[in-house]
Length: 536
Image 1 (tube, rainbow, N blue to C red):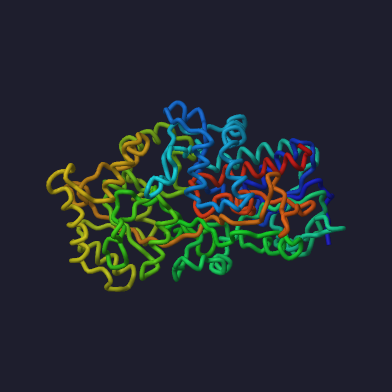
Image 2 (cartoon, rainbow, N blue to C red):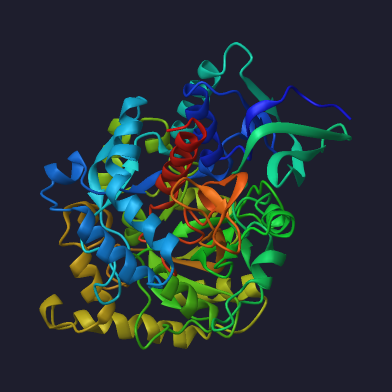
């Protein structure tokens, strides 16, 4: 058994929350060991592949756009949309902590680290009835979250010079170690070379992500009041399997709360080049596309439109007869609205291609559509609706799509425009018109028009599945990110940050997120833990 030099802090997990904890602890004068299951080039976890959107309150970008945001407005939106239980002390405390400190501890901190945001602030998760974000808060990192991860890694290596930072990649922590009731380290398995390592530290920080990377854990914790689809794609990190949560519960009497609270997405497709079995891509569904069931009929009576209530979209699509749905659109819609969440499919932002990003935003681009048509069998195109119906049936090896019914679906929608746009009365069109009132959304959302308008083709169909993403529940923590036991007392020497802690308190989001709250939640909980570890 090999044992590295004991450290002041042992960080379990090399995702964003773990990296920020390690960086701030090093800057506070402590020595740190980071143990992570993945390879060195994949440090950063899921954040390395994330788009980089952040919900922030009271920023200069908001002020420049005339958005009168402040913490009390954001807290009202957060608690109402998330349906937080008023009796859940720590989740509500972390919600308040987030809205009050996201400007100083996330926005300002990132600016000081040399990162920048796009000037526009987007408006997401508005709520179906206006109960979500009352104001635009979604800020996009220039360079995506990949630039964020690389920036933190570079700073981490600089801060760790002189031997104060130790890395253990391809190691899996399988148990926590205690002495006299205090957590003093962990036992790790070397998954590359074999053997065990006993890791000693003054304190242990759990930053291993959530539970949704394991479909076994995801299904075991699935809410009883929600339909569970027969198949799921995995958009979480496969190492976020919940095992360490259970070790903390069993060994330290840690409180695990809200394990069934999840933030999944309704518009996944299998990754054309998967990084692991079941790997999915999360598409940002086109607002102007018609969302159809497996028969090619529009899901209703309330049409499904993205950008208002993600959880509701997941509930509606999960309740369908088959574990897939379709989006029906055309080339015109795809050029303006088609997008894939994450750094991988957003090279203009990721690689700082400013001019090309501006041109794509102003005039649209079919590059992503062409890429998906070439790489994914789930994305289909045809010059006619009957031809598209045949392709849809060929993909599902069925006769589910009646070409006549698909044509009738499109005709019924297009009939709304027969007497001009002023006389339409379709709920989806009303949502689109409302979204387009906000300038940044108008640039990314087509003006309502008939699906079969001349020159808009070809027609496109995308088969979608539910894709897992974030765990909203986790280990109960206080505002110092200390893990609490079932009696509400801190477990000596044990901390949890990021998704492992439900982004604070064991579930600061409640049942829904205002979107863009995950990366900042990792940073906020990590910095709180580091302050406590450094005696701040």
